[in-house]
Image 1 (cartoon, protein in one colour):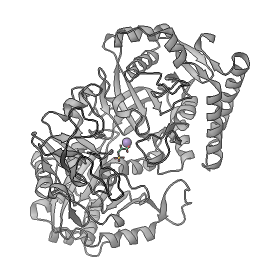
Image 2 (image 1 turned 45 degrees about the vertical axis):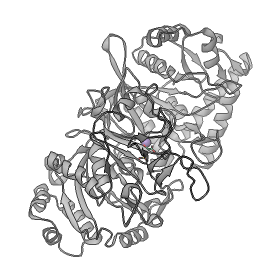
Image 3 (image 1 turned 90 degrees about the vertical axis):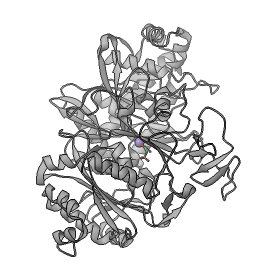
Image 4 (image 1 turned 45 degrees about the horizontal axis):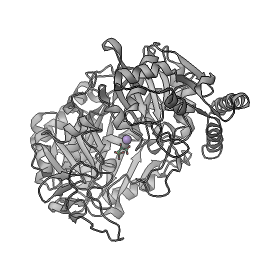
Length: 631
Ligand code: SPV
Ligand code: MN
């Protein structure tokens, strides 16, 4: 970025004395330059610099209501925010990596020439904050004072974004002070751009056609313009994740789209698991499993510390999908959403009786109210003649993890939690068994992580049941080529003295007639079984694709945990090895790794070939569908 005028002169002229001192205390010329340059280009009406103080956090929270980005609801601490009607999800098309011309373009990533991108974004940014207040905030990804910490500076003219980040991330002003001038930090500039009125006279981004999210890996700066939706505007979420994936790939640690949770075993033992699931595959509901404890639901950092994997949650709050949350399946989330606490609802409905309503909420379907489309009534149609539901299917809630009763005590531990198991789970109606352990790290990373797929659902546009390739559920957030990313995962394992076990789960298996083979609560059993496995307390059956549970162990867990009998018949159906489906998957994967990914590590093909050989051998002896009693 360029600076027209002397940095300190700009800061002195534009900040009040108190805020100027807040910046000066950091004694960091690159922070000064980043802030001064952004101020010069965006030209905000006024500026607020926040430290970690409760007073500054309160100022931000109140500004969100004062600036008409949130409206207070009846319940204490609850507010509602709307994003524009066409600003309800991540904008994949306009999210681009800015790469210098001499860096080989990466076909899987959406990239553009860095100079052109910077020119365009600076034009969009020019005077964009002229009518707005700029919030300058400091955060820390990962716990503070920890080998995992990444300090961040967020500039935003949206009090909603700043308030959301106060709920979702740890404050980082002290971390900058502690680290001194040598700190390597991530930088974010966000503007909601020109605004227009939506329901409740809340203000939403108007110039959606000029929505841009540009990622400059070289300077570790993200630019996000003309948008409010969290996935585009919350710099520290998926945007920082892309910067972190690029950074960790040079330093041999991992940034993963993973939950992090404690699974509670016998005698009060807690074993920690990370888990990667593409969206709509049960990630949050797994992380929030009753009886277990949660550290994170979305982004985990994993490091090799003294030969073991330790992990932290990059975040400290949840920006979760609200659709379908109800008191019987999601009692903990339900409680959190229906009691006083500081939380933001986005893109749901407020009824005429002043009650919040989201799609699938138990109770009476509302007649009328106000939602992200404005005034709403039952049966209201959009301009394409499609019925507008009460809440958007990507409507969300934002709260701090510490309001949950099941938050794990290691949430802020600077050393993280030692990871005993890694879980990969996709939506798979016909191929893999409900739970399975890989043979080893390499087999797990390749057959369970890199080959992760998920079937499309009615909730997304297009055909249902189409398998989408999503290695480690991270494909949307990769900032490096897929082959290199897989290789990093493999290399990470090589240097460990004690590797976590790698598992797959599949909550979506169906029988030939299309009926589910499992119930929602069964995932509790798979978690408990994996907990016993990582502690070497149960044996397995070795099948061509990995290790599966023994019937009697599962039956014992069903009795203990769900208080019900588990029949041998159900077990046989669920754990039948489906040879042809598995072979077809290998062919599908080989094809993707050959044609779509240019830098696939050769070991991927070897591991797939070996698995294919084992499956064919089993097929020759036992046939197409092999029940576990053959092993
Ligand atoms: C996801 O889509 O995986 C999310 C929400 O966690 S977003 O912030 O939009 O990425
Ligand atoms: Mn996510």
